[in-house]
Length: 305
Image 1 (tube, rainbow, N blue to C red):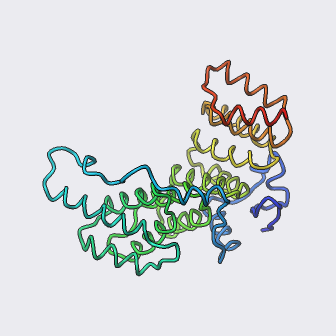
Image 2 (image 1 turned 90 degrees about the vertical axis):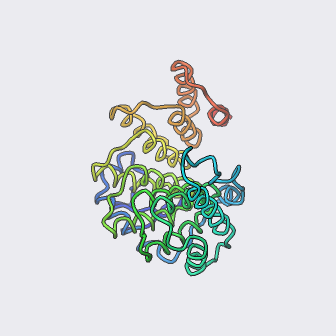
Image 3 (image 1 turned 180 degrees about the vertical axis):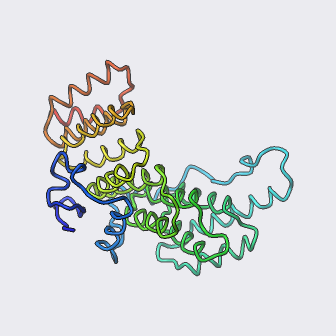
């Protein structure tokens, strides 16, 4: 596999993988094959989250993740106690430094939860860390749980990858997908979508295309989020023709383009200097009575500048 493109590393069987408009049809290999190769090419690297992703990671969440009112009415007192303990555990995990160790995570979990935690508790903790944009702490929690008696299930892995997606932490998202494969867990569409979005936010549009191509070759269900995530990745570079191809394929597959689809395509046209196409899609948004947001109008104006 060759590694090229100044926009960021990518993988493919041909050097024109991200440039050719039909590159996804030319790419060979399953999703698991791509993930394994990605690990070989990027082993030892830390996720170089872009500046905007780094700023997002510093933002606190809007509030507590495990409030008492999340407990269903009629539950016992012990459920309220467990919720309080989980909240305290989440708070300490959230406040861990980025260079914390798996052992530190284990000490926090064992001290607060002991042997009372299960897969549902694990999923809530991972979702909470994702809410606070603490993907590194989520990964440490995963590594601790993989060696515990509780272990990790499909939902827990999905929650951890979603945490990486919010931070643009593409490297750890790929590593978590590989862990799922190594444990013979069937990778689902939601987890793969989150990984594609993480690659997109992390500026690794070639990796996003590789994962998308692997999903398609494995016969996985590709929904609107799958297409929107990879189209958004194309919008970061001058590959506007590929974004149009993906949108056309999206319509043929029975998925209806939404405002996020058009936003990504218009942004791609902006990057490619295709102002007339950007205006055409803006007009189509109005014809379909979709509610355009500030990003859509900004991209259209930028294309005409």
